[in-house]
Length: 281
Image 1 (cartoon, rainbow, N blue to C red):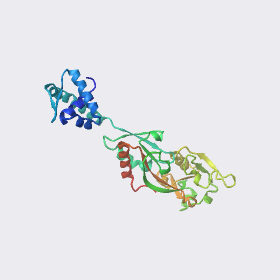
Image 2: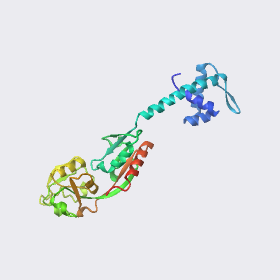
Image 3: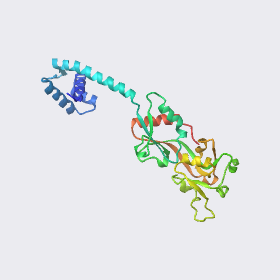
Image 4: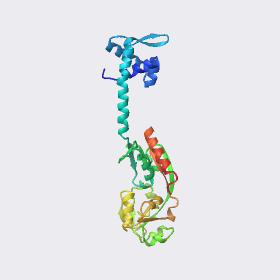
């Protein structure tokens, strides 16, 4: 017999005394257990149980098969347990372009620090991810979202920039400053259209357009321009500072974690959330 499922059903029936209990134990329907036992009896040429009011009574053939099947199944279970411990699960992550991974570093370390911890693998498709690092408005449909912090937006400046001495800035302060645009940002259209103003006299000059925020901060640090970014980005690099923007006080985002509806993904989200509680802007 190459299919081990009938042996598993047989052993469960032997140990529980009924086909119905064996079916519940293996999460199958009772006819599946009955059919599997019938196939075993046909294969080995004799009955494995006597059916009675008290339940199943093993025959001599049934007792012999139980002893031999136990050795086979126990060896198989030990092999599977040993191999399962050697193969670390893969946790697929997706990070939106307007999100930095640095605020999540402590939680990501918590997931991977144990020998049995997950291997992190970033994917370019949020729908394929187990865990998504995102703002609430960007959480993939159908994925539960866990909020971790809320933050506003400010102006990212290179360290030493003249405007970095100000505690707070306004759009008027940026009139003569080149901008690094974030066209991928969901909140890009909430800043009053300052980057796309049809009046050339009012539009802020755009020096470059980034593809994601990690690249954006490098461009700011290099002195190519300034950018409107979430306040928490100020902790991501020692080469930049972020100053609050008075004109964008109503523009805020709620940051957190979205995850697939699986126990594995939910467990990873739990560990991330517990490690990150209290962080953020």
